[in-house]
Length: 258
Image (cartoon, rainbow, N blue to C red):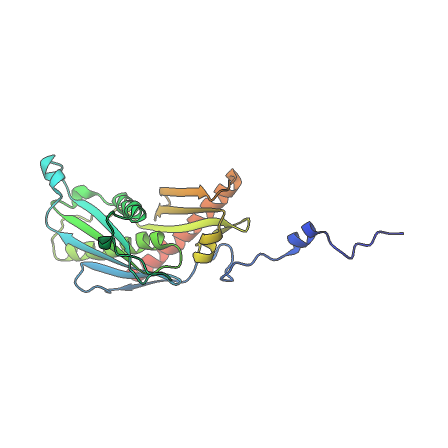
């Protein structure tokens, strides 16, 4: 008598299950990304950058002086610095403003340093003499990927600001050497996925934020397991997903600039 195979083992049933992301997206599909420029009219350049439901206002303002340490050390060129904050109503529970805390938020400090050094990687500051470019990234709504949306939107705001300085002959040369964008990737339910939203970011066993230039060079990779490990094969897959995502973001930046 042949064995009855009508009932599958739990493992076979698990393998037969179709992998579905909470948003219904494919594993290599990003959320809808949009840029609304001119959101802050008094800034030299501004963008409302949206990755799905995540929205970040990115503004660039130019100051005709450099930090005191540059003057004291007689460092030539200009400077770029960034600030990042989450507005009180950006999440389900209210976020305190940094000014109301006795100490600065460590997460905010880490993110604004990431934004600043990422942008400086694609700027020739020698061509930005005696000026400081201030980048402000304020999270209007958080649904995962706020730091990556901040970097992508901040580059576009910077590009708009620099274009204005060049048009008004306040700069002799273009200091921007390449595009810049960032995307998150992670391992969710044992599958590598692109552009994590909040439910995926919360439950991912591995998450990473990848910053890249338009020419495909890596600027920064932040990756860690959440009480988990990941293989070299998974890392390679995550990086491949990142390259795809950044390529799409750079194409959107170029389209926005016309």
